[in-house]
Structures are given as structure tokens and as C-alpha cells.
Image (cartoon, rainbow over the protein chains, first blue to last red):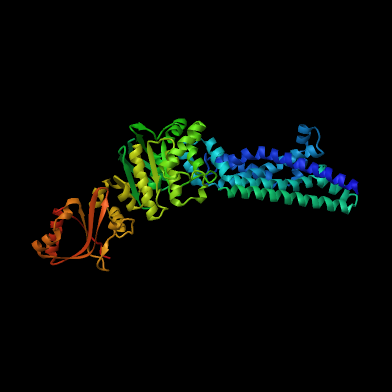
Length: 220
Length: 337
């Protein structure tokens, strides 16, 4: 019995670290991309530096990456993982495809959140002589913060799901545990526990995300 | 700060939003720009507040051309323009104080100085002690006061009011206009008010330009234009104004008859003291039937409006109207429907 819990605990930690780091890296990749997508959109949509060509190009790239089935993307990215991490299997190596798969998703979520900001407010900021950088940093991001928090929450939850899928092809964590023990060794109990832990993780993240978002809104 | 516009043009596709506007807005006044929706007001304000560049024409602030400024100079120039809006456009992520502090923050003002200035501005707009209030807890009038304080934070030389009172009730409009007039005097600002409300022009502006279809159809001193409107658009605006339920009772028209009369007479200043109607009535032999009447205060000038029928022979009617015109009364014939 205790061996099961050791296994589950270890796998949970692996999942958490995968999700934590891939969230971080997908934000680093997706945030600038999302800002750029929102900023280069047409003026009616609140773009501060409208640039249809760039906007279209970025939009296409994001769409292609997003419509890629994750499992295939992961296999395609094995060489990159090997290059960056030194191996293509295990927890650390999985962070690479997870981050890259989530980045376009993050970009879209950030783009949508920023576009929700009242164009009138942006116009006011511009009329006061804000630079584009100041508009992004001091107006768009703070104004969109509750939506951004909801978006990041959604990203984390998606990444928990993806990380479990990654278990099927050599990633670590709860998904790996469920497949190797639960599926391949017919240990229904381990499968069950792994799934329950994933559900609990998702629930906790959702509740925390909602709380932060609501608190930000309540202050307004 | 004097503003000069030279033959400004801005087109969107086939729409000539601003179609050759030349205006001279004198320094240290409140200048009204009135027009119906679609007349080109919003475009004009975007052009003179340097949010957009004209397709043709020039904008001068005190003889310095500003419509072709390069990026950095443009941002510098915008920082010395204050602007308030119909929907206030305050930052919901910031409280009242932080909103007012924004223009100071982006210009790199030291923290201590910002705090001091914000308190001064809160006092100026009558919101002492409300600095920590989240924007959503403020009323419309209070929001506009915060917006005014924010617009004034960097000591601008021009203040643009883009339909600033259109979302407010008459009483709040009154208090906001009073505040703007007060601030204009205190800070020697050039205030440009874009509006579709004639009451705003009447209560706050010194001069006015009337806009229609992207061109200026009439401009001059508010009192002159009220007394002697020349364009159809202006007359229409004035008709709407008559009987408007406003904060001060003297503005209301007294209606004796349900049917509106055939002629609108407008008297100005001193002429109001003479027994014009009875004199003309005796001289040319017509009867005036007064349907409605009232007096409006435009700046320091009183303008009397009277809606009457003129009964008598056609020849006598014509003579009566001529006589009225000679006495300085403007006669407008109602369009027969």
C-alpha cells in the first residue's frame, strides 16, 4: 500500500514541476506573441500599431501550431528536446514540447484578453501622450488582468491534461504512472488514483484562479 | 494657446468626414464646436488633438505646425493637451488618485511630487477625500471630475472636451460646465468643446462653430449666432433648445397655445426693452397672436424668443416683418408641413 502512495506522490511532483515550468516557458513565449497580435490588429479592434501583414502572418503561425495534434507535435519536437535537454524522454524533456504546444494557446488567450480592453481607454492613454510601451505595460495589461488570470488558469489546466498525454510516449508524471502501471500492468487501483489526483489538481487550480480573478475584479 | 486650422481634410473611403475646415480658435476662451452625429465632429477632434493625421491641411498651435510632428515630438506635444470624453475613459484598474497620477507617471514625475499634485487636483475638482475610491463606486459627475483632474495633471495649455456632458443629467451637466468655466479662468486654458447640445454652447462657450457634413456652416460669438442664426442646421439646433427643461427656470418657454405659431421672433439685448410688437401692430395694421415666449441667457446677453402668428393682409404681413427686421429682431418663418 505504502509503495503505491510513494509512486503516486513522486508522479504528482513530476506532473507539478512539468506543469509549472511549461506554464512559465509558454508564458515567456506566448506573452510577447499575444501582445504583438493584439497590438498589430486593426484600429477598430483596438490595435495600437495596426499592421495587417504582420498580424496575418502571426495569426497563421499560431493557428497552424494550435491545430497540430499534441502527440504528433511532441514526436516532431524530440530532436529539439534532445538538443536542449540532452534527452527526449522523461519529465524534464517533456517540458520542451509542452511549452511549445501551449505557447500559441497562451498567445491567443492574451490577445483576446487585451482586445477586450475598452478602446476608449486606450485612446485616452494615447491622447495623454503615452508611448506604445507605456500603453501595453500601464494600461492594457493592468486593465485586462482579471481576464489574463482566467486565461493563465485555463492554460495550466490544459497543460495538466497535455502532461498526462505526454506520459504515453515517454514523459513522466501521473499520465506515465497511469499508463505504465494502470494500463500495461492491469493495476486498476493505480490508474484510478492517478486519475483522481489529476482531477483534484485541476479543481484546485480552477478554484484558486477564480478566486484571484474575482478578487481583482472586486477591487474595481 | 491659439489653434489655427487650415483647410483640414480627412476621408474614410468615400466618406468626406472632414471636408475642408478652416477655423481660428482664439487663446484663453471656451470654443464650442456643435454638429449633429455624422457631421464630422469626432474626426475633427481627433485631428486637432493630434490622435490622427489629416489627409490634407494644416494644424497650428500658436503658429507652430503640429500635424506633421515626428513620433517623439508628437508624444511630447500630446502630453500638454488635456482631453475628456463622453464615457470618461478612466482606468478601471486604478482608483481615482491613481487615474489622476497616470499622466504624471508616464512623464517620469517623482513620486512625492505626484502625490502632492494629485491632492491639489482632487481639491480643484471638488473631490477631496475621495482619492482612494474605486472608479466603479463614483457617479457619472464624479467620474467626469476625476477625468478633468487627470486631463489637467500635466498643466496642459489646451483642453478638449469630446461630448463631455452628453452622458450626464442636466443638473450634473450644469455643475461640470461651471467647473470647466472656473478652471478655464484659473488656468488660462483654451478649451474646445465638441458637442451636439446647444445648451452646452449657450451655458459655457464664448464662440461657436457649427459643423454640418464635414464643413463649418456658421461661426462667431455665441450671442450673435443665437440672435441671428443664418444656417438651417443652426436654426434647427435652436428650435430644439426652445422649451428644453433646464436647470434654470428662466430658460423655459411659456406656452400659451398648443398650436405652434407661424413665425419665430428672436430679440437681443436692448431691443427687448421696447414695445416693438404693439408699435408695429399699430403702424402697419396687423395683429400679433403670441403663442409662446421666453428669455434665454447666453453668456451675458439675454435673448428673447417669441413664437407668434401675424394676422392681416399679405402686404401688411410683409411690412410687419420688414419693420421687425429693422428693429433688430430676427424673424424666422416656420416651414409649412
